[in-house]
Length: 529
Ligand SMILES: Nc1ncnc2c1ncn2[C@@H]1O[C@H](COP(=O)(O)OP(=O)(O)OP(=O)(O)O)[C@@H](O)[C@H]1O
Ligand SMILES: [Mg+2]
Image (cartoon, rainbow, N blue to C red):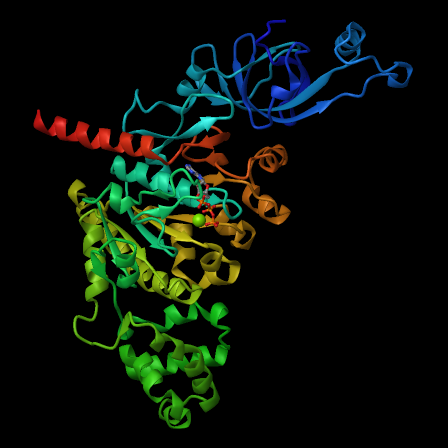
C-alpha cells in the first residue's frame, strides 16, 4: 500500500456511504473527521467527506500480554491484530471525461482512498485566479492549503444563512462574504447592524490585532453608514453618512403587529390599532401617544374598548423614548427615501443601531424599512418585465439580519415581511442573509428555502437537526458538525458550493484587506487602458 494512501474501501453502499480500512502505516491520529478525500475508482473519482473514525476491537485481546510500548512485540501485534476504520460519505463524482456529476455508482472493493489534492479542490470548487470575479475563496479544507470557493452568482440567487454558537465566527464569515460581494460588485447590501460591527472597525478577540476593518473602511465609495445613534458612531471614530430618523407617521399597524410576540400584544389591542388607523390614517400612532392617557375618550371616538386602547398605549409609549422617531410631518418619507436612493445608486447601506440595540428597536426598524423595499422591488421588477430593457433590470439586493429567529420564528414569519422575502422575493431580486445562533427557532419552512448554509459549531441537538433538516446524509454530517472547532471552522453546503465541505474560514485580516486593494488597483489600471 502506498504510504500516502489513507486506506482502502472494504464495504459500503450508495445510500449509507463506505467503510475504509485505514492504512496501518498511516498515523490514525492524523486523520480528522471532516477531511475531504478521494476514492480512486477504476473510471471515476468519488470525492467524499470523512465522517467518523473508529478503532476495531482487538480479537481475543485478553490472550495478549500487554507488550512493552515501542517494543517489537508491540509493533507486531499492532500490525497483525489491530485495525481502524473510517466512514466516508461520497459527495460528488468526477468521471474519466472530467465531468462533475452526482454520485450514482460505487467503487470496487479495495479502491484506494487518497487525500484530495490542491488541484482536485481547484477543479471542484473553482479558483479565483482562473475565473476572477466569478468565485470567491471562503476558506481552506481541513489540513490543506487550497482555496475553497463559492460561486458568487449562485450565492445571490437565493437566501443564505450563517449559523453557529456565540463566538464561533458568524459575524466574521458574514463580513467576509459581504466584502467578497462588494469587491466583485455582485449585489447591493443592506445590513441591519445591531451591534455596530460591519461599518467601521470592529472588535477582534485576537489580542495581536484587537480591531478589524469594517466594510465602510474597506469600501468607502461603495457603502454608506446610516446611524440611528450618530453620537455612538462618532465615539467610535467615524462619521455617519446619514443620521437616520423615522417619522412616526411612517409606522404602520402592520409594523406593530409584527412585534406582537415581542410586545406581548393581546389581539384586542391589535384590533384597537386597526380602528385608530381607520380613523386617523398615518397619524394613528401620534394620536395614540398624545391621547392614550385619556383612553376612554379616544376609545369612544373610534368605537374601541377603553381597556384595549389603554393596553396598546402602555405597550407603545416606549417609542417616545427613542430620539430617532420624529413627529415632523415634513419630508415624511425623506430619510427612508434617501436610503432607497442609495440602494438605487448601488451603494450598500449599513444601518448602525448604536446604543439602541434592543430587540424592539431592531425588529421595528428592520420591518419598517424592509416593507418599503419589498414594495419598491416588486414595482421595479414589474417595470422590468414590462419594458424588458436590460437597463431596467433591478440590481440584486441582499438584506442581512442578525438574530434571525426573532423575525422568522413560526409565528413572526407569518407576520413580518421577512417571511415573505425568504419565501418568494428571489423572483424580485431580493434575498436574505440570516445570521443566527438558534436555527431551531426559525420556521422550518423558511429554513428549507435557504440556499447556501455556513454552519459553525452548534451544540444543541435541536439546532443541529433544524439546520440539517432535509439534507442528504444529515446523520453523518451531524457527526462532522459535532467535531468542529469552536472558532473559525464551518461546514458549508448548498446552492453556491459544488459539494458540502468543512473549511477553516478564510482569515479576515491584513492579508485579506490587501487582496481587496489589489482588485481596486487592477480595476483602475483596466480603466486607464
Ligand atoms: N475568519 C476569521 N478571521 C479572523 N478571526 C476570526 C475569524 N472567524 C472568527 N475569528 C475570531 O473569532 C472571534 C469571534 O468571532 P465572531 O465575533 O464572528 O463570533 P460570532 O459567532 O459572531 O459571535 P456572537 O454570536 O457572540 O456574535 C473573533 O473576534 C475573531 O477573533
Ligand atoms: Mg456576531
